[in-house]
Amino acid sequence: MSIEPDDDGFERRMRTAGLIVGPLAAVVVYATHPGSHPPEARRLLAVLTLTIAFWVTEAIPLPATALLASALCVVLGVAPVKAVLAPYADPVIFVFVGSFLLAEAFTRYGLDHRVAAMFLGRGQLARRPIGRMLGVGGASALVSTCLSNTATAALMTPIAIGAVRSPGSAHGRRAPAWVSGVVLMVAYGASVGGMATLIGTPPNLLVAGFIERLAGVHVGFVDWLLFGVPISLVLFAASVLFTHLVLGRGDAAAPPAEAAGASRHAGSASADGASPSIPKDGAQKAGARWTMAAFALAGALWTLPSIASLALGASSPVAAALAAHLPEAGVAMLCATLLFVAPVEWRARRFALTWEDGRRVNWGIILLFGGGLSLGTLADSTGIASWVGAGLQEIGLARTPAGLLFCSVALTIVVSEFASNTAAAALLVPMVIAAAEAAGFDPVRPALGVGLAATCGFIFPVSTPPNAIVFGTGLVPLRRMIRTGILLDVTALVVIWAGLLLLTPLLPR
Image 1 (tube, rainbow, N blue to C red):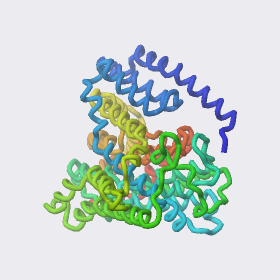
Image 2 (cartoon, rainbow, N blue to C red):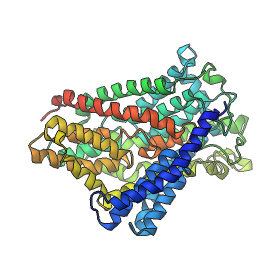
Image 3 (tube, helix red, strand yellow):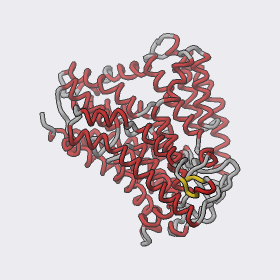
Image 4 (cartoon, one colour):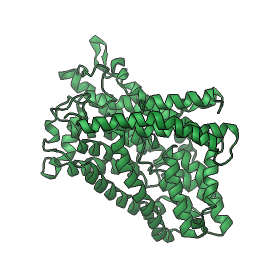
């Protein structure tokens, strides 16, 4: 698989254009000063413009763009250095670290090949790109109904890698389009699957809490299923269809079980491209057992607080204690670091993971997402996000209940492309509830629309953790993610809007 000359030339032209257009666009935005913001917000708008241009064109490496944006925010006085850099230590960052380490162990001991061969089967459908998209995406969506989308993507990414490896793959070469499509279905399945249940993703629970406190309406687990499952199923079908239409080209005839391990994902690749030494015989089996135990423990601890809350009630002391002591970040770090003390060959003091494995984690993706969190936080603190939200109330379309719902979903999808899904929901849900109540509309629908749409950041790696995780494999070029992501964003807007209009009358009042 080689890079086509035309594509290579197009990439060079895109990078060159980004290096020129990005700074010029930032200067224009600063000079025209849309919104008449305070000086700090005005500077942040310019930095955001430059960052988006560099991310879209990949003018420089994406993690470097994130670091550049943070540095500019400090130097230009947008916020103090501690405020700018604090999001790099956000708990979700450590979910990434722990999840990447678990994924490294999963790949190190060949578990990705075993699970991929077992799950994807050997029929004719399993040998085609669309069959692998359905298999990987369906499993990811199913798991995401119980685990967070971040945890699901971390668990499923090694399986997807095992499903797309081919004997001729190698570092530094562009993956076929269908390979990108299969890996992307991990992120899409994790995101749309999380919409189905109340515990599927943090914004769901956040929105339910806001609705109960601010609107006096209780949305329970079964209530959420009435609209969450249909919307999730339709979006999953759309994600498979669009991904296959856009990226389903190429020959995928080799069954997953026969795939060679030459192409490791970016989170598992060494700096020089060489594969790590894999323990054999007893050590191999012991490492695989420890890795499966760590994954099982992570899954159990991630779901335990939600199960306790559903069984005992959210106000139960036991449920509250489990939620306080078993956050996702803590569980991910605990289960990953336990592998550093899990012996596979005690006499030689060899353990399931070593720091050589840890060095292969894609730390650039962690910096990239930290930069995205930083920009989202600054957009909130400087008033940029509120300015965008206030504009919603000036739109003529938002003057009817259906129009307000449409605008709420559309705005949330846009905001979620540049901020975390939880942050987008926390920012926008109170705003749309207040806007609905002021206009005399039912506030439940627009609030639910924000919660579901917050998970629909499909275009950029920083839009949502699953996107960043699959981008970190190195098998999904940014422009391929953008092409399918735009189609899914537009589809999600229509499906969520229509689905809530049709299904939310079933909710109790």
